[in-house]
Amino acid sequence: MSEPGKTSVDLNRLKIDRDLKRSSSKGWKTFLSVTVFIIAVIAGWFLWSKNRVEAVTVTEVRQAKGRQQSPVLNASGYVTPRQRATVAAKITGRVTELFVEEGMEVEKGQVLARLDSTDAKQELEVARAEAAAAEAAVAEIKINRDEAERNLQRLQTLFEKGMVSEQERDTARTTLESLKARIESALKQTEAAEARVRVYAQNLDNYTIRAPFGGIVVSKDAQIGEMISPVSAGGGYTRTGIATIVDMDSLEIEVDINESYIARVTVGQRVTATLDAYPEWKIPASVRTVIPTADRQKATVKVRIIFDALDPKILPDMGVKVAFLEEEEQNIDADEPKLEVRSSAVLRDSDRAYVYVYDGGVIERREIGTGESKNDVTEILSGLIAGDKVVDNPSVRLKDGMKVKVN
Image (cartoon, rainbow, N blue to C red; front, side, top):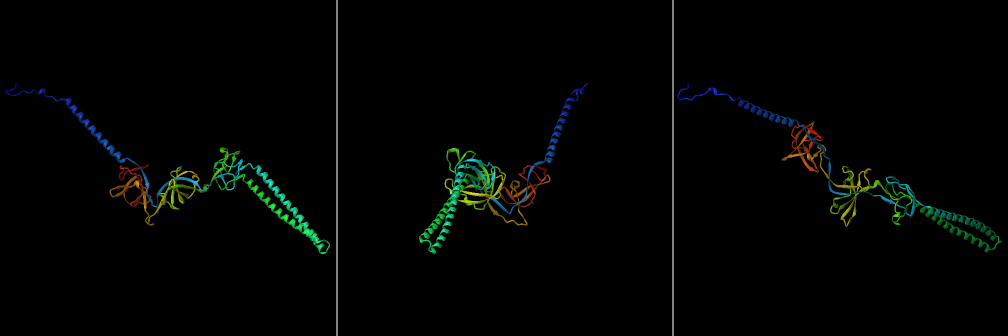
């Protein structure tokens, strides 16, 4: 029984809520699991980033050349031969034989074609017969002259003995002189007949078409049975040439330079040529001549450039781009040769320059001394040696000592 003035407490009604205890325990476990997961992710990312291998491109440090050339003028033109000829006949005739095909190599004097020469052969035979007749006439007159000389000698002897008259002796002398004059005339006729033989022989030879120089046949312009003429006649039915020949040893470059820039071009100047067909092939060349006249309409001056060495891949009428080079002498100590590297490999931080040197799969950040930068190349004064490999176009993710692999 409770005492008066005090509150009665029923201890039997006090108890622990077991559901609340289990809920609290589950929350702590979830918190710990999430925390462990986050720590594991961070540790994994750290290990992955530490062991990750970056892919890079490397370039090599090379020794600078004693003479550097830079382009002062660019132009475009075509490959043209100094010797190109469309071979034709001197006379008009029909093609009966043809001995050429495109791409065939020919030599100087080689027969390319023959025309119908029937009439020319007959004319030559007539001329030869006339020449033979003239020679026979000379021989006949010479026989008569010899006889007249003997007759004159006999009459001279008889005249001295008083057996013939002076008139008979003078008649014999006149006959001899006449025969000698006839011989001179006959000899001139013989020479004329022989000259006609040579003319008709040359005329006959004109029906044979030969190569004027050695080269390559680049175009076959006629066929057997077609008419050939040295002048255009008969519309499209008469050809003016048999074939076109190019002397491949005479190939050169022809470009038109704006007259405002022609002062930058000199004879003998070095040139780098690039064919449109082979854009990666840099061909060394030099200026052969500057044509001493300008095109009034285009305001250009023609320049001819010769290749240092010809190549079978260089063909007539190919498009070509040329860069006229300016030579600059640089003082280079033979004991301390200058080095150079691609400018894209050099990084700068304020007034300092550095590169990432690649060595055995690991990169090293190295500070370097640099000189002049020109044409995407930077001069190296210190920090590197020839043959060192450095990272080209380095990424901002690169760090000193990082493992990398080369693309």
